[in-house]
Length: 351
Ligand code: NCD
Ligand code: ZN
Image 1: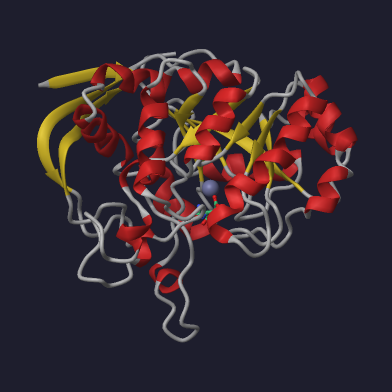
Image 2: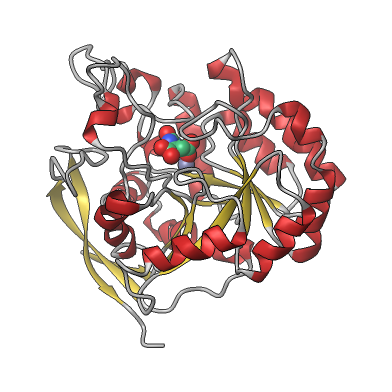
């Protein structure tokens, strides 16, 4: 059995820079026509920095087959002029990282600083730049951090009714229901890993975890939650509202950051780009919703961002595929697991 869909977009990816970018860029470009490149590592705070990273990406992938969509990070130093300049440089989104909640967020903003950013949000609204949220409240209370951030975001939704906003990598039922209640200017991205895993898997006691051993490759932010959260996310991924779309949050880390023996710590992030589409087809088939896959990966996000739908197609084949143990020297998401689908072909429409 074959499934042919419009080429997909990934509205949340970490491509990094330097050697890591060289290793991972092609894995995103081989699956996705476009991807929104997140600005945390390396920190991208201005339009010119985004332009430089974009040209570095084009050293590794061809502009004829892949379009990086660039984002900047909002910091206490961001001004309305920063936004205007970024817009002129083609930046499509700016992202709030609350301070200290994830990789590379030490330069992020505090909740107090957020209250001072009205002029920046107003400029984004005027120029038509999307506001992306890492939606976790800083400080203690990890498991409820997403819920506690929602009222903070809601203030910005109410104050800036024409500003498009995205709750990134939703991880809870409350997050999904909150997006549903918000006006159509608000959408949410859903990752592949949040559709598959729960906290039990991270702790080695779920369907994918093993033998009670902690699974560093299932450690990411926002951390996996309960099965009821995961189920609500699957319902959101297949709903026709157009409010939910794919952002893989593929976030590669070198093996010595996932298993830092000296420091005894593990970086948050899962490298899912190489398996995202095969895993999604497997998941959507299990949900009896293969006919909804294309909307989730190739239509809802583009429409929300006001982008044309991609030309060209991706062909997926129903076939057992065991995810390789390593890709680009790293352990990909679901390494060693059996999936029911495989990416068979990508046709890039001539432009
Ligand atoms: C991301 C990273 O490594 O850059 N990690 C993650 O666990 N998702 C950062 C992020 O998106 O929070
Ligand atoms: Zn991310």
